[in-house]
View 1: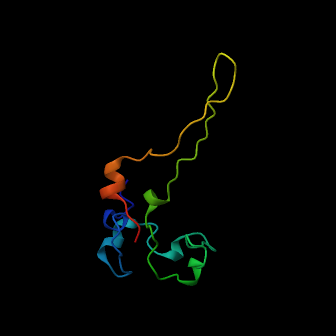
View 2: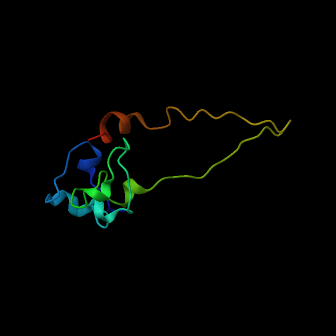
Length: 100
C-alpha cells in the first residue's frame, strides 16, 4: 500500500504544501480524519486545525491490528500469560519509526 510517508514515519515534519504529503492520499490533512479527533496528548482537537498535515498521514499509519487471542493450557485450561513487550523489530525501533 502506498498511502504513507516514509519520511514522516521517520520523524521528519512535512509542511502542508510539501510534495511528500502527496503519498499520503487519502489522509493528508487533519480535515481528512474523523471529526473531534484529539492529539495524542489529548490537549488539541485536530478538527480545529483542518489545514495542518495529519501526523501520521496515510492509511498505513491509521491501520491497527486489533485481533485478541487467549491462549490456554490444554492440560488444565489455565490462561497462558503472553509478554507483549519487545515485539517490534529492533531496526524499526532504532531506524525506521520516530515521533515528530
